[in-house]
Image (cartoon, rainbow, N blue to C red; front, side, top):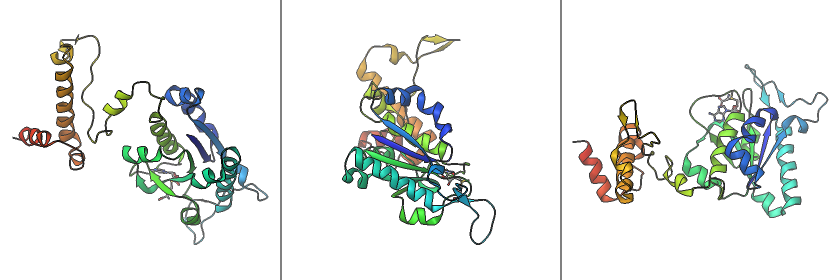
Length: 250
Ligand SMILES: C[S@@+](CC[C@H](N)C(=O)[O-])C[C@H]1O[C@@H](n2cnc3c(N)ncnc32)[C@H](O)[C@@H]1O
């Protein structure tokens, strides 16, 4: 997967993309992440990427020119390195608190795109013509407002990279992750088997894989009902599991 990020603050990406899973995935060539400075595409006298809003009001708005030129430049590089078709198919994503709220389902769907171009807004946001004529998708990381799209871009990129085959060694752990199966994850324990008088549930030490699997599934169901009951309506559950949940409420 090839990821491009257009931002006014390229330095912000240095730490998060060099460390841990994303850093290792880049080192191993499983993902390429290129950061582009929006200001490099601002060609007016003062290289201004933002300007005052028409109609007045506080704050500044990101101008359309540098964003259109930036996306066009990235697409022409994709065309040169891969093919014109790949450039045309690249998904252009605006990070914005007005977009569809990111879910694991959206993350999975996005991994089908080999090339993704993220646009990080700042200040009061971006000129509306960017939304209307440049982007394919608008993604929010939650119903709150951050100062810029950089942290949201890191959040989305991290969630995407984890799903690239080979990035996380144990695919079973991905399947068990919260939200992968529509539920939240069961409780996890590690050594010691007793800490300050609090023992690990005996079933986890039993070595009986079938019982461990059943216990974990039931714990996921219990937790989801207690902490995120909204998820249960859409979760793919068996009739026995629905019955189990009904009995829990009694
Ligand atoms: C201060 S916000 C602008 C908010 C804008 N005035 C509005 O009300 O929609 C600046 C930039 O931060 C990013 N941003 C802020 N909150 C976000 C969120 N919840 N999800 C994704 N991006 C966000 C967007 O790129 C946005 O353009």
